Length: 249
Image 1: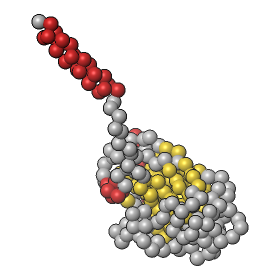
Image 2: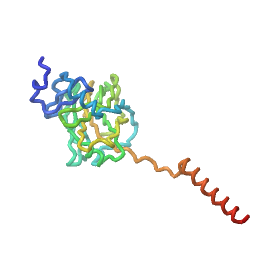
Image 3: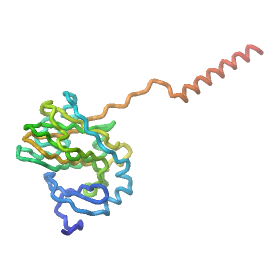
Image 4: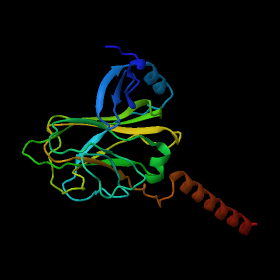
């Protein structure tokens, strides 16, 4: 096999996995091949785009809390997302019930685009629609960053065991699971490219959806900082001592 970049001119998208491997995707988002190529991945790692990499967590949500909506848009889905905002693209891999496994990547977004919608960061909701007795598997989920859409490095990753996403039957559009722990995008150049990719296996005829969920704003502390409180107390004590001195004179 020719593993040079020039042998892959027809691929629309390339997603770098760490420093040593990239995956090519066609226009529909399906993975078509994985080839080794080290140069650009290493450059991106050295530039700090892949710094502070995180291991993502998958947590079950056994009640209806997070719903796909215009404020929680799909990034990858096996069916139409009816409340998707028209300005936010997503990959629809159109699961008609015949798929046993699939590997998909989202469209490319930018740091500026995501921060404008998710000021305090985000998690990813996973809506599992299980039409069968066998529990399905989320093999992996990644977030990747890059200086351009042709040079992406994975920074956050989740890897799962077989049968790790049995459905809670929340109904279509509601998250059965939340993927959390993503690296903060704050401070990165706004033009930095962001993408997500995943692999599902042991699939049934139901269609799974991945959508973004805004993190809550951090609480505002009403308790004075210890240093500030000490400084305030010292100042008040000094004023009282000065009054006593003036009275003694």
